[in-house]
Image (cartoon, rainbow, N blue to C red; front, side, top):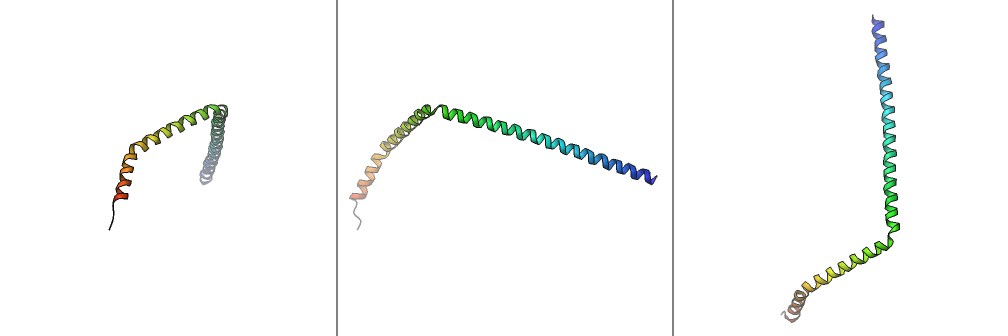
Length: 99
C-alpha cells in the first residue's frame, strides 16, 4: 500500500513537471511571436516615417516657411502691444531723478 502511494506520488510529480515544461514552452513560443509582431510593427512604422520625410522635403520647407512667417507675425503683434508701455517705462526711469 505504501509502495502504491509512493508510485502515485511519483506519477503526480512527473505529470506536474511535464505540464510545467509544456506551459513554459508555450509561453516561450507566445513571447517569440509577440516579439516578432512588435518588431514588424516597429519596422513598418519606421519605414512609413522614412517614406513620409524623404518624399516631401519640398512640403516640409513650405510648412517651415509658413510656421516661421506666423511666428514672426506673432512677435510683431506682441511687440506692438507692449511698445507703448516700454516707452513710457523708459521715459519715466530716464526723467526721474533720485537723490
